Length: 347
Image (cartoon, rainbow, N blue to C red):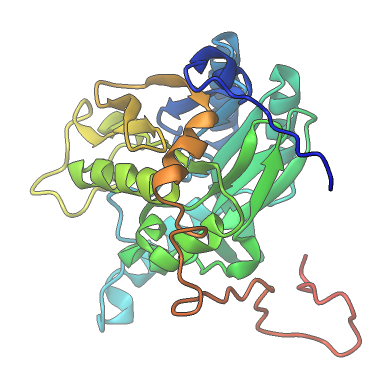
């Protein structure tokens, strides 16, 4: 009979137990893009990453569409069933300016962002407007401290009127990156409300859930706490803080949906960036008082503690009753028999 080996564990040795798990310093950036000026936004990004790194950040998360800009308040001249001559040309001209502010992935702006990550030795999660052919996508880019573009996620379903200007992502970019600071992934803004999209990431072992957003509502805070508790993961949600003056003045850029044009100092997005623990506790934020950085130390042991109670894709699942199949191959509108790569020929 084989000898049985037992390891004696002091259940009161909290300090020793904590030492068994990594602690990661993460920073969420709350700031505004320089709208219609991507080079200036890239320079602002460089400064903000340097500030985060000076605080010891190992992981830095930026808001939704930070590079390229979130087109808050504009309707791109869209009228359902309206005459083509009414607003169509003006709206298309606005789209042309927005298209010019987007970035190619890969491309020169991506190389600069990668260089910032390398210079400051951080993992970088960046919201960006991706230009692919003549379609724009709401994307999240992931960079390593080695200056590598690890990959990207494209928002699966643009929210409401966003569908006028952004295309749809597919399951091929429901990606997770296994890094020394944890398994990192992202969903964008209201696709975080899609239970199956969340489950697709949980199934890959997500530990640090990034949620770049443009939602500054109180309800968003409830969603972020729920997602953290549901997934047993840390949630890092970054939003922009914007005043009207952060966008071009009228008539170059007009805000619709307001009773009157906002004054230059009026807040048009109040932020609400937040960091939440796997138990649903708020570690930093929400921040509503201007631009700034939120930093927290993430004890990855908290993930294990949270999943003792509830593991959504582990002991709390019932795969004999409910399962999810994720179609994680690129969904291309055109494929060519002569190509064995399966890649879009425009890439």
